[in-house]
Amino acid sequence: MTQQRTATINFNDGTPTLELPILAGTVGPDVVDIRPLYGKTGKFTYDPGFMSTASCKSAITYIDGDNGILLYRGYPIEQLAQHCDFLEVCHLLLKGELPKAAEKKEWDDRIRKHTMVHEQLARFYSGFRRDAHPMAVMVGVVGALSAFYHDSTDINDPEHREISAIRLLAKVPTIAAMSYKYNVGQPFMHPRNSLNYVENFLHMMFGTPCEEYRPNPVLVRALDRILILHADHEQNASTSTVRLAGSSGANPFACIAAGIACLWGPAHGGANEACLTMLEEIGDVSRIGQYIARAKDKNDGFRLMGFGHRVYKHYDPRAKLMRETCHEVLAELGLQNDRLFKLAMELERIALEDDYFVDKKLYPNVDFYSGIVQRAMGIPTSMFTAIFALARTVGWVAQWNEMISDPEQKIGRPRQLFTGSPERNVVPIARRG
Image (tube, rainbow, N blue to C red; front, side, top):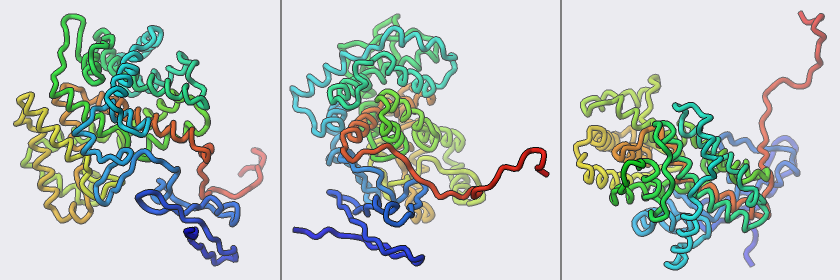
């Protein structure tokens, strides 16, 4: 029998020495279990941004940032992007295994039959301004799903959780496409059961009642790959938000709406839009040197968007796949000489040869190319983050479901290091000098 490994903490203030268990996962760093710390010592740990804190146990996604590895349920992201479609990956994340052929057909059919939204829900859109950001609309409309589906909000019932997952996977693309249509003043397009998941989304985005829309297979595959690459990414800010919201017992629709709100932040889901804006600002290959010099200047507020990652200290494996996708899309559309793509490739080449970026391990991340791909497909920048939310919904639901099923799950309640005033007495207003 293997002896339990422990970590010992010694205090120099008279607090007794404390031994804490060391827990090991299947891969990745070991974890010091600090749950007994406060009860036995009256002390907390301090870790802003959770840089060194594991907030949960999870069997869904694993990232090795030092070596540029991303695994969904043990499968490398490169293999999934090459051999699977997005709904297969959804099945994997939610159920733990890739579907067999018969399972996939049944899975696809279940999702296809839930793509329509309630007609009353469609009327919500008229309450928004026409120029409302699609993410603002999505936060409201996805949250409102809980008002329509009381039959699947018992979080302790596995069947309720499964039907909620199906409804969210099926309806979020419809809600996202409707947000775009409302923006541009075009009629909503109903989903079509004859189309697959990505074809259906493109139909709802770009189709009109005037003529039949025929999705380009190359663009369908490109968007499918974008969805796979963004489906989950361990305990990032929006996923942690979904878990924290869910820990209170909130219904799944409210939890996913909370994740969408968090994803909207420019440091998270809005990074690909910011990267495209940066490329537009640079404008020409001849100006790259000037902007790289600005990025190195600590007194200059300019940042080289699309480089570096909180977790990856190596080339983001998703960026390599996105670069290939970028080539395929631009070649299909006859945009090989696209100004921004050529600028992006030259910026990447120069940055990867520059000692400053190499030493700091600032490699291109997935956002560096995804904005260019979506722009070439005719998707407006305001929809970039909405499509990210569409992709990440399955990861959020899988993580939420895992948390609800965890017998060790408790309501999230971070503690703090208080730096305000100690207790003091109120002086009556007449006596305040």
